[in-house]
Figure (cartoon, rainbow, N blue to C red):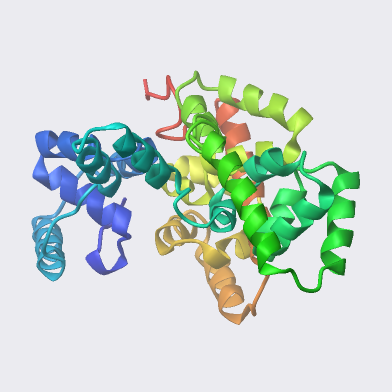
Length: 337
């Protein structure tokens, strides 16, 4: 973070500076209440800070105090509070009630289906009669139903879509019967199968702890089986915005391999701090041209912007693997020596 100006700092940057001002003990206590991803984001920012101007420190502390005054009261871990309160009543009924509340089965099952992971919904319903499956999915949001269909066999998905197309009106009694059956199914899996013990976030967390280079090999092996999943993992492992943490020399090496069209489109949604870092490592003429192109650029598809950003991210990771650049905060053994 070369020059810090309060009005140009992101929320994460302000939080990082605030914690550094509060000291190590306070920061440790705050980190204990955060997720690994949140801690990783803040520590990456902290690594770029070597001086905090007194005026900036005072401004950030003042802003924090003002925010506290605007939002007085208590922040409560609702689930933990409810769990302890109901458990304190004792008895078997308390256990049943607690399980229903925490699993969401006290709500309508069709509403619960809407909040479940698509893969989980497909696993839960794939053995149901296609007509039943069609009735259930016809009550869901279109985007959710589309994601569920991806995890069903092609033939079954086609049959279900055909039946949905044929559905006109459904008697309330039929919906009630379906919901009763779903309530039993969901009640049996909600506490077991919906507990998130894996997933992309878990993989990203694990890969962030392995030796540098091993993470890329693992993701490459996943890509040979499931390219879409590998891409999702890469996006969470190291994002385009994370490039703000690299030094000028590394940025120059990356930019030498990127053409102006790719760079310009990638900056369409980039944070100002990253834009400034990039502009500071190319010629003034090139920077002005890109700025003019960005101002003149009309609406573009977000997917196109993300594709260009991923092109640059992949190049950065390739250069890191080859030992040509260092990306701070990525995996074990990334210390400068």
